[in-house]
Image (cartoon, rainbow, N blue to C red; front, side, top):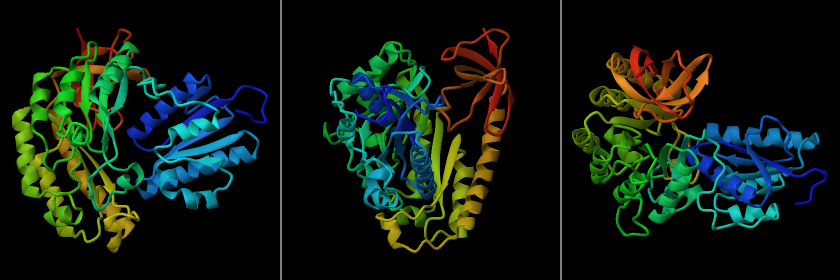
Length: 436
């Protein structure tokens, strides 16, 4: 590719948003490297001359962060510190025409499915044979595995189908081959991600195939942990749990966003499930896999939400005592069915409700962590900071969940598993010592 610099091009990829975006960036980097183009993630050396910003367009805060990041890179280009700025990802896919007018300094905009087109800007060819050959942006001991793209659900608040399209599953053979390649590179934990895990296989196999995929991945030698993210509760296939119980390297962990607990809100959000049905499902999950860690995500401030709805959600949390909870405030997204409703709850009220809900969960989390004191857990070492090691148990996913603060007189290797006896517990983290 021709630029005004004489030295060889170096591309820096900046990734915003979710883990699915990270995988897209990793795939892009793998393609560039295969075409002998120097590429890095989140380059701190600032010795690159081309930037690709992989944007998020999920909610207002994410969109704002994406736009600000683009503007920052454009400023560097104006100062002569960059030759090219390219933008891809969800925000670019959804608002390309508007953004082209507002930020003309960007050299090219690409949608979420336009990797081959982007590679042409680098005079590079898309190499379909590079299955799973990606430059990991994560530490080498864990990686995300995206099993499908898009979503067929019609949740009233969600714009993801507008940006990612309909659900498309990847073949089991391809996913197993990619997992095997990741393990050969030192990956010990794979986190399965999709917009909707439980829908996997319906399009290409005409039946839900997540249990079969789990079994096939569990057979991959050297893969010690497999973790499930983003399962939809309506018509949840309970056979997933049979596989989880049978296979020792599938974490007893399930991330199942429920979004709310009030029937009024569940209906308004088009979640295709009631509170009573969710209660039955939670009981069934815990009966099949005793001790399973249940993580959920909630939304507060959807149009029409009342204080009674919020109280019902708090009661639901107290009743079911989830291990992990995340919460978003509602973002009014054009193109969604929710956009037809009046966004009638002030931002400060949404935020206060979110805080009140998380205070309920904070107490539950503290009590659950206290129960772990004295127990020993297999723990994966993620990093070392300030003279102490930080790790995770099978009940903790990357970044969103608890960390284990580990004290050890001997040197521990990042990516190794150790047994840790818990000595202290806090609201969201636990602390312990390595035992032999």
